[in-house]
Length: 79
Length: 153
Image 1 (tube, rainbow over the protein chains, first blue to last red):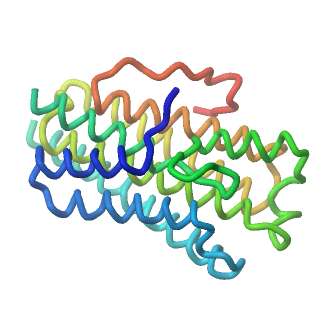
Image 2 (image 1 turned 45 degrees about the horizontal axis):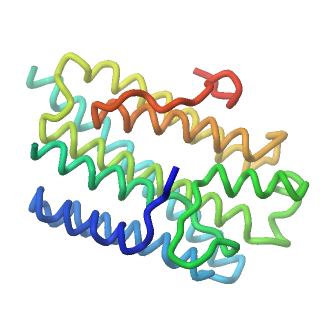
C-alpha cells in the first residue's frame, strides 16, 4: 500500500478544510501531522522529552476516544 | 459526494499520522507495524530492557498514539455529521471499546515489558483501530487477522 507523502497529507488537510469548514478539526489535523513530522525529523531527541511527549500522546488519545464515545452517546440519545 | 470527499481526506490524513522513524526516507511515513517489524527483525529485546538505551519505544508509541488520535477524531466527525447511520452506532461503540482495550495492550507492553513482542501488540491495536475507521468511512473492513495479531476481544 502506498503511504501519503507530506505534500499529500497537506493536500488532505486543505481538502478537509474546504469540505468541512470545521476549523477546530483542521487545526487538530495539522497538529497531528506536525507531531509526525517532528518525529520524522528526530525531534524530540532526548529520552526524557520523548517520555513526556509519549505521556502527552496517551492523554490526547484517551481524550479523542472519550470524544468519540460522547459523540456516539449523543447521537444515540437523540435517536 | 460531500461525504466521499471528506473521507478521502480523512483516510489520507489518518495514514499520514502513522508513525515515522528516523530510518525512513524524507517525505514517507511507514506504518506503525512496519516500525515494530523492524524492531523484531534486528532482534531488539522487549521494550523495558531497552527503554533507557534507545528512543525506539517512545517513537513507536508516539506515532501509534497519534494515529489512534487521528482515527478517533475523524470517526467523531463522521458521527457528528451523520455519516455513520444511527443503526450502526451500537456496533461502532463496541469497536471503540475493542480499540481501547487494544491500545491498553500496547501501553502495557511498553510499561511492563511483559509482551513477548511489541510488534504483536501494535499490530493488534492497528487492526482494532482500522475497524473503527472502516465503520466510520463506510468502507469494507481492513484485512487483518484478529487471531494472528493477538487481539483479545
